[in-house]
Image 1 (tube, rainbow, N blue to C red):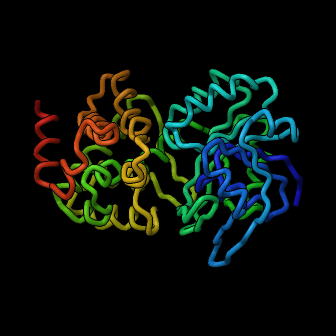
Image 2 (tube, one colour; image 1 turned 30 degrees about the vertical axis):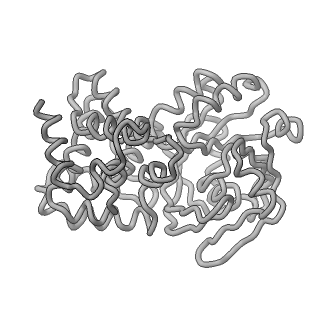
Length: 350
């Protein structure tokens, strides 16, 4: 191993457990910062990782429930920011108080607006964009299953980036360097959009959604809107580790839905493993939070800046937020495909 760094993993969810646990198994020095009630469960049971069919246990991980305690314990070389996007704002309030003591932060969150928010608090020289394309399933607190290894992306342009990529790859994470953080993050977001909001709203699996001609066409419409927004902002789509995003985007834009459906369905099936999409998991957990505004909502906001209409993304965002906040009954569109399609069409035409 080339070098040993001190890593702080902010968020011990599925991604944080996977990245941090993999680094520990490779001999890196890792501590976790977990602010939720999950901390006590992880301290009691330790970490479990099923990687390539092998079970690994880390019985006594270094885990802190406050950033001040973590920083007092050790000087860190890098922070990995692995929170859900809806937890970014409260986390920034904490980071702001300790900004001068923090090392560079590698942001692995979904969406395209978290890095600018981090930069506003920490400074541009302390933020590195990243993404994870491997399919990880959370089995319990601090307990994950690697369903499909793809890899992760790390944006260049920072002195630490070239050091992180080989260290992450040595830990089995298949890291790759990207010259454009914007292209990397938007390309990942495109893959996150497919059958995500619709799965939560309809309470249906991606396979059911993509197997229905009308629902599939709506998915293609939301993706085409997002790709048009990318083009308007001169954002190039790039392939990600194990994920042929350029081919995916080309099929979305250039093939009739009846021809693209078998290929897109196959890509979607391989991408998520056996788990339901994240929006569905969050909605039915009852936690009252959703990342939809950071994905579909971001498409809408960036579309407005470039005068690109994004009605399907707007309707999906508004509808799922209403379900999440309880202003729309959960059963409104549950398996109600015709009502769903009619209301989406009415919104677009209205």
